[in-house]
Each structure stands twice: as C-alpha cells, then as structure tokens.
Image (cartoon, rainbow, N blue to C red; front, side):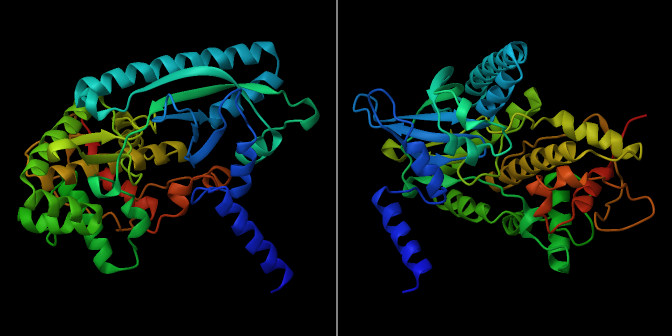
Length: 400
C-alpha cells in the first residue's frame, strides 16, 4: 500500500470511529467536536446552506437539535471587528430578523396547521468558537487567530427533532428541472416548454397535451419525485385526501401572502405517515429562503418588458420562486384539485404560445456579473439556459 493510500485508510478509520455524518467535511466535523459545552458534548449531525446542526447528548432532551446560523454568526464577527457602532447595527438587524421569522412561523401555522411546523425557537447566545471552524465556514472572514475570542454571539435555533423514518415519508421536492434537463435534446426542450405552459396557466402549444392524464405524465417527467406521489395517491385513499387538503393549503398560503416555500431540497416538504396510518404535511425546515416572494417575479416581468437586464440576485430569486410555484401547481394537477397559484392576475396574458428557446433580436440580455455568477450555483449548473427560463416570463406583459 502506498503512503498516500495508507493515510487515506487511516482517515477512513478515524471517520468511522467518530461516526462522521455522510457529506460533511471530516475536518469541520472534528473541529466542531472541540466546541464542548459546560455539561454535554455537542455532536455535529448535519450542515445545510446556512446552518450547522448539533445534538447534545442530554438525556432530558433527546429529541432536541440546535441549529447555528454560521452565516449570520460570521457577519456578527465581521461587524465586531469594524467597531462598536457596526456591531450594534448588525445586532439590531439580527434581532429584527429573528422577530420577523418568529412572526412568519406563526403565520405558517395559521395557514398550514400547527402540526405541519416543527416546534422551534430562535435565540441569540454566546457560543465557544475555534479558528478551524471559522476557516472552513467563513474563509473570507479576516480573523487573526491571536485575537480570536473564546466565545462569539451566534444565532441559534432550538428545534424539536421530527421522527421521520424513511419508510414513513413521501418527499415532495421539486429540484430545478433547469439543472437536470438538457436544452440540446429536442425532447427535453418540448417537455420544458410544455410543463411551463401547463403549470403556469399559459396558452398550450401544439405539442402540449390538453388531456389531464397525459399532462400528469408530462409533469412527472419534469419532476421525477411526482411519480411516487402520484402512485401513492392512486392506491392510498387517506394519503390522497390529505394531499388534496395540503396542496390547497399551500396554494392558499401563497395566494394570500405573496410568499412561497423552498421545495428544491429533498426533504424540505414531506408527507409523514403517523399513528393509525394517518398522513400529515410536514415542513422540515420551513424558513430556508427568505427571498422567495411573488413580487420578485413581477419585478422581473416589468424589467424584461422595458428591455432592462436583470441582476444575478433577482434572476436567482425568480428561479427559486417560479420553480416553487410551478411545482406546487404540478402537485395540484396530480392531486386532482382545481386550485392553482395564479401569478399574473394583474398581467395581460399572451394569446399565443411562445417558444422560450427561440432566439430573436428582441431577446432580452441577462447580464450576469462574472464575480457574482461564480457564486451563483443555481445558474452555473443549469443546462437549460437561464435566458430560456426568463423567456418564459416574456409571455406576460404588464397592463398598460
């Protein structure tokens, strides 16, 4: 065995010994284990787009997890280095954001039911820190190891862990078709255009079926997760009944609040089978993305109508939001309910179907700043060009 292979084998043994969760940087895992509490050792069990997720081996609270928002924590540390006034501004902004999220949780429970939202509480706490964790989570942060404080102010979410065995959940996730489909394949182009027409209430082109059962086939090809949902709904009456109610509630939430939920993650939104085989809607992490508002789509439509380019941040907001609307409307089709999210009630709808892949002199350029685009994974990984995605919006024009 070569020396390098020997080192890798040793590292695998260490990883198994410490039970490193799959998909987590082992170095981050071991560094985080050093952040010992006063009484119970923290155990890193996951890492998301914003959070480190810990459990403490506390026998009194075995179902409690702790999420540390490392992005906001890094922002606070950076502000602290800029002086007391900068820190106070950052801290006040964080206090306001926590209050706003608490209000949104209350709102979600009102629309979707308290059983759909995991019990959780936001707070600001002083936590221990080490340079290895900072280096991995916020490499851009100019922290002098010699001046690293023992503790930092952190945004902590305490949440009751949801018991969700894999055989008891049906995941309702709509990952971006723009990443999976290939614009170079004619069948994918037809599918993409057709499902956008079906799900966004647009005029149907010649290739798009008007038969609902065929439309269900199309949306299942666009979003493969719908296959298992459709199959379960057809054979399980209890699941079907709860699916209808849950999708109607999701649509009502968006129509009345102007906000959508993040459906791109695998288990952000699930149906969970509980006691007596009853099903419940569960939002495993209900506040993942704060920028998913219908207003972003309407802003983009207005800019496109005026031949104005979109900034990368707005283009990504539109991608996330419109994908959620499209997927939930596809769920409504699968659930056989008439309700839909109607984005464009105050817009003039095109009378003829359009081709999002058609390149004309009237195409609107989407300017993606090179520096910003490097961090925009949603656009960098797309095989359906973002121009084609945004061309879909050009079927709608603001009323004069």
